[in-house]
Structures are given as C-alpha cells and as structure tokens.
Image (cartoon, rainbow, N blue to C red; front, side, top):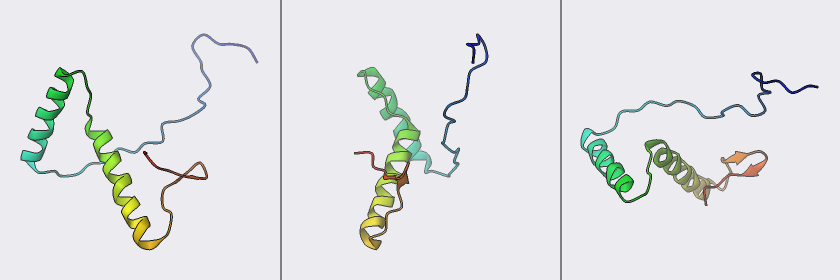
Length: 81
C-alpha cells in the first residue's frame, strides 16, 4: 500500500469522553489562580488531569472495599502510579 500525503490511517482513536459537572464557584476560582501560578513557575495543571486522577483514586478506593477490579485497560489493571 502506498504512502499518501494527506490521508492517514487512523490507528488509534481518542478514547476519552467529554463530561460536564457543576463545581463550586469559589473552588473553580481557586483552581484558575493555582493554574496560573503553576504556569508562572514552569508547571502545568489542567482541570481534565485533576478530574482523571480523582476518578482513578475514587475507583481505586471502591476496588479496595469490594475486592473487584474496575479499572481494566487493554486487559491490564489500569493505574496512574
């Protein structure tokens, strides 16, 4: 099969979902300030990375309680560690 200039084979699609939630206004203001301060110091903090980490931790707590593995990705137990 030849090489194409504009058309590329889609090998892996983005497997993330868009979520929406209501968050306390003061908490979001604080996050925005913290994000700006992190950027000023050469770091990066994103709302999506915080949410994803929190979800993994919360699900991990449920796994400890139930003994069941919920975080399976590609046949392997998924962790952000």
